[in-house]
Amino acid sequence: MKKGFPYLIVFLFFAFILHAQTQRIVPLEEANNASCSPCATYNPILQKFYASHFGGVISVRYHAWRPGSSDPMYVSASTDCRQRINYYGITSVPTYVIDSVPEGVPADYDAMVRHLEQRLAQPAPLKILVHSKIVDASVLAKVRLIPLQEVTAGNLYLRVAVTQRMVSYQSPPGSNGEKNFPEVLRKMLPNATGTSIPALTVGDTLDFEFSTAAKSDWEIGDLAVVAWLQSNDNKEVVQSNINFPPFFVEFADSSFKFAKANALTRFSFNLFNRNDTTIHIQLKFRNVQATNNRDYFFETENNVDWQQPITLQPVILSILQPLLKVEIMVFLVGRFSLKIWMIPVFTAKDTAMEWDAM
Image (cartoon, rainbow, N blue to C red; front, side, top):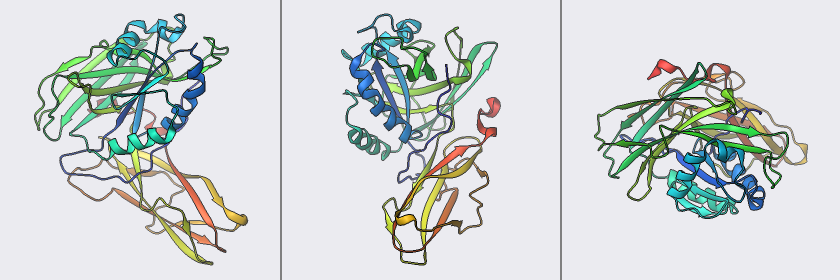
């Protein structure tokens, strides 16, 4: 088995902070199978979308009992996978479900992005905090629900999933040729039905603890815990989160910029920490493209050394401004377009959240 993503790529979008609301995190679910030929064709599109938008979206993948009933990831979690797939009335694979809406085959990348952006534009009425740790080959998870305004959805259930970020095989476990399977469901806690949640009132704080013994086919060091609050009335997902600390970058202007010769052009980024604990990130620039091999260099306007780790304190909901604004100045020699992909990367001290932080 090999590890999942070595770093977290964040979704670039216009973010906001509203009093008594918080940034929505959208769940992406999928039913697939290791012997499903269309899965091998379309899963790379789904994974590209997910990897490019992690932080705005988190994921759980359910392996189905058909077309190949011997899919080892289905066999390992057959009851939970079957119940979650049947919950959405899924009859064929692959089928992806974004924010509780079954969308069919994940063939249209742009449609996925549009759906995600529409949902992210709607703030969530509560926060979900997720912490986990491994003790004596068991997964221990803590989940906290914090209502920030009235939650109007009824018949609520808290669903908690233990996933493995990447399950890899030396040879394909099914007939479709795939050997790498991301975000595989390992166990629902306590089960796929979930935990019934009473009416939520602003000011409440609900804490839950779960545990499960790890199976021999799990890779302990590559496990995650995903939690989401869902209404059984209409399957709406109110909010979700993962035990990794997601954070967001806001582009002040996401369009291409053309600079004048021998001039400074500013690119503004706002960084938000939506978690309950401090995180530390390192800014990196990848996929910087300049035409005609022109010269350029990066500087910051606000005395932030972007080449060193940056500490981000937890967000305070009543504060409307971002916790850190990074102004990157690019000096351009000649006229050309510059494409920047900025990736905040967690430093080593944030590889695990503090267990007692809740």
